[in-house]
Structures are given as structure tokens and as C-alpha cells.
Image (cartoon, rainbow, N blue to C red):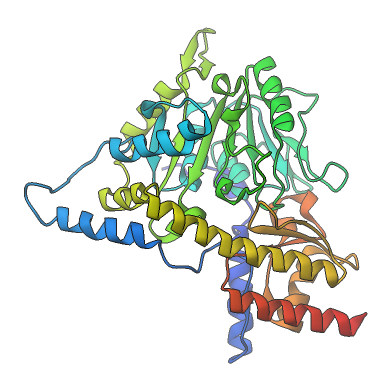
Amino acid sequence: MRINDNFEKLPESYLFSTVASKLREYRESHPGVDVIRMDIGDVTLPIPQASIKAMHRAVDDMAEKTSFHGYGPEQGYDFLRNAIAVNAYAQRGIEITTDEIFISDGAKSDLGNLGDIYAEGSVVAVANPGYPVYVDSNVIDGRGGTLVDGKWSNFVYLECNEENGFKPVPPAEHADVIFLCSPANPTGVTFTKAELKAWVNYALANNAVIIYDSAYCAYITDPELPHSIYEVEGARECAIEVRSFSKTAGFTGLRCGYTVVPASVCGFDEAGNKVSLRKLWLRRQTTKFNGASYVIQRGAEALYTSDGKIQVRENVGYYLENARLIRETMSKAGFTVFGGDNSPYIWVKSPDGESSWDLFDKLLHEVNISCTPGVGFGSAGEGYIRLTGFNSKSNTEEAMRRIIGFFADKA
């Protein structure tokens, strides 16, 4: 059989796998050294108790013939879809119907799988730096072209830098599919409504679709900043929104997220006829997906109860406090930083012009802290690293003591 040659075009290892490999090698050669991980965006707090109780009840349901659940609906159970429609959207003045919400096993899966519903020849626009899945999944699907000096020839790159506050702006050239993330991974910056409106206008003018990754919207504390792209007029005609319970409620190991595809978002077939993207996504999910676990969906539903909402806010607040400490400490240590407010991620510029991997090695070998090299998120990330607020409070405090001690001694 013939393989999909696009896999061989990709760099040999995924960014986070490379980080994990380097960390493993260091630990093997330095046994007993306490390395504090501030690289991968995994959580450290337990699942909220409201979800734990709900999942215990759901497990009991599976033990009784009268309440047992086998295959569920591929688009998700109505009890969770209704809870999302009311709590995540209606309470913010956004009209999203239950049948426009699709429950999945996480945002990462959906961000990659959405490529099934747009043409192989689509022109894709991605932020540089940006989450690697946007790029890699489209390369696998045949939309990348060739890799030249760290960039794929067929992509439109939305350059993010200090001059534009690491916020991509609509390009002069045409794109069919645009990936946006707010609060952004890896830079931690967040779009305003006016900035999103410019993107909505661009998408409408270009008959393009925006795939809007708002997996970290629970971390937005500024009341002036939008949590959803649907807070912007016109977005229902051009945007798909992807969210996750992973960083909101610690579901990284449980796997549950959702994608919103409004009925009014359309693409065009080869003959130029309008086609509902919601209809295509439903067809895709019913063909290739058997639905998220009933037990997990009950746990997600409980996050929208009064107790669940309180517990989620407490967890999010815990990580935001870690992010605040990292941001302030790195600034005191002489670094230029972005993010860390309205976001769990802190984007840090190398103070002495080191490369991303050189700064990674310095932090690992000199202060025993593991970070994520910014260049792994795109060529514009060179010279930066990403730190996360997802570790424990005690580990975060210890990591920052090491940073201040090391860089103060070098000053």
C-alpha cells in the first residue's frame, strides 16, 4: 500500500515530544535533581468535586439495566449541549442553539479533524508563532506545500511580534481558512472586540471561515474582553468556535471539549453552491466518531451547576495567581514578558539574544526548570520561551526563587 507522503514532510518530532525527550535525558544523567516542569500545559489540581460526584452517579447508572447507556449520540448528549448553550452563551447574550454544539473528546482533536470539511486546496492562514496543531494537521492533509526556512510554502503566515503586541492582523492576501486563538497559545495575549471585528470583516469579504480556538476563555478576567467570537457582529456567518474542559476544569486526562458550528456558516462546493458547514461537520462526526463517554459528559455537565461554577473559578484563579507570580518575577529578573494576565501562559523574551533552545538549555541545566522553546511554535518564536501557570503553587514559588537567584547573581 502507498502511505500518505505528507507525514514524511513533517519535522521528525512534535514539539512537546522533543521537550519531553530532552527532559528525560537530563534526568537520566542527573539522578536526584529536582526539575520543575513549566513547559507542557498540563494541570495539577484535581477535578472539581461537582464533577467527581456527577461521574460517580454516572458510573452507577452504567451498573443498572434501566439506566445503562451504550452508544450515545455522536454530537453529544442533549443534557450537556443544553447546559453549554445556556451557561456559556445565552448568559452572555449570545444565541447558540443546542444543535449547533458538538461534544467531542477535546479541542485538539476537533482542531485537526475540521480539515475534513474544507477542500485540500484551501489556503490556510496561521499565526506565527501559534499552536503547532494548526500547522501540522493541515500539512498532513496536504495543504502545506514544501517547508522552506521553517515555513510552509502554501500557508499564509500571520506574523506576531512585539510591534503588533503578538496579535495577528488580517493579511493583504486571500485566505480560505483562518486559525485564531484567544487567549493565545503560546503568547498569552487576548483579542479585543474591535480586533476580532476586523477579522470577521476580512472573513466575510473573502468568503473565508475563522476557526476560533477559545480553549482558555475561562482565564479572561477583564470584563471588556470577549470570551467568544460570537460576541462580535457577523461572526455567526463566518466562524467556528472550539473549546475545551481541559484547562478550565482539569479534564486533560478525561478528554472532553466541544465545537460550535452555527447553521449560518457556509462554504461553497465545486459548482459554487452554498453548503452548510454544520451539515458537513455532523456528517463527519457521525461517520468517524462514536461520541464522548457518557460518564465524562455527566462530569462536564456538573461544571455548570452552582457548585461547579464556584469550583472552576477557584481552579482558574489558582493558576492565574501562579501566572501573575511568573510574570512579575520574570520582569524583575530582566526579561520582557507578555501574557500572564487573562491567560495561564507567559511569553518570555531572551534577555541576551540566546536562541530559544539555548535559553531552554540554560534554564534546565542552571536552575533545573523546564520551559517550552518559542521557536517550536513557529519561526517568529525564535528567541522566546513559553512558561505556564499550571504547576502547583509551591513549585511555582520555588521556580521563581531559582530564577531570581540565578539572574540576580548574573546581573
